[in-house]
Amino acid sequence: MTELFTGPDGRPRCRWSGGAPEFLDYHDREWGFPVDDDRRLFEKLCLESFQSGLSWRTILAKRENFRAAFAGFDWRRVAEFGDAEVEALLANEGIIRHRGKITATINNARRMCELVEAEGSLAAFVWRFEPAAADLAAPQSVSTSPASVALSKEFKKRGWKFLGPTTVFAFMQAMGLINDHAEGCALRAEAEEARCGFVRPG
Image 1 (cartoon, rainbow, N blue to C red):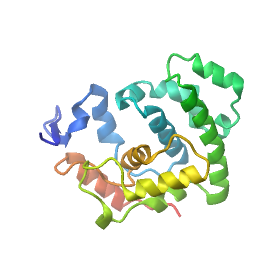
Image 2 (spheres, one colour):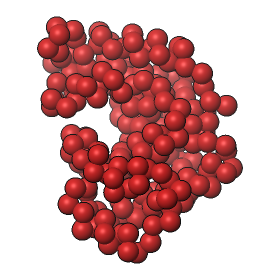
Image 3 (cartoon, helix red, strand yellow):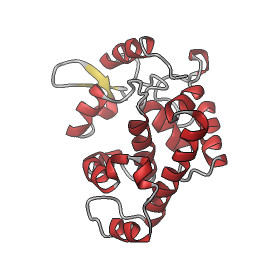
């Protein structure tokens, strides 16, 4: 089976980008391009934890609803959520109404406050786990990596929840900590160029 999908413009792309109409723009504009904005990074960690056991299409379709429900993923505001907010979220049909994932998101917002205080930023913290090129598996051939295992363990050590190695690997793919666009995908070179010009947060 080919790893590539031919888009409407005739350019080859990662095969998964052809799985749903909304995937194409996400693949071309976001996935695999490096990010150093803490709110975007926190949002992605939260959405990946909600995605566990579900399809990414489900999460992507509800992303704006999640943003509205979780204060634009302003972790300082989410950290203040209490029982009333949890009950409101459980009644919100626009998101995934899973109590464990909702409470984990609030917990993780509180852990985020601690991490930013200790490390300066989430970006500086996660980019320390960027693997060397020599340590990368072939693109889209694995669902975890030594780096994702290490980062997942560190999150767990710091009290974060619902961030296992597979979830963290998906986060690393999406946020450009690795370039996992398939060989032959037209966006692989663009993502690599962006990564080469990206100033790693210190």
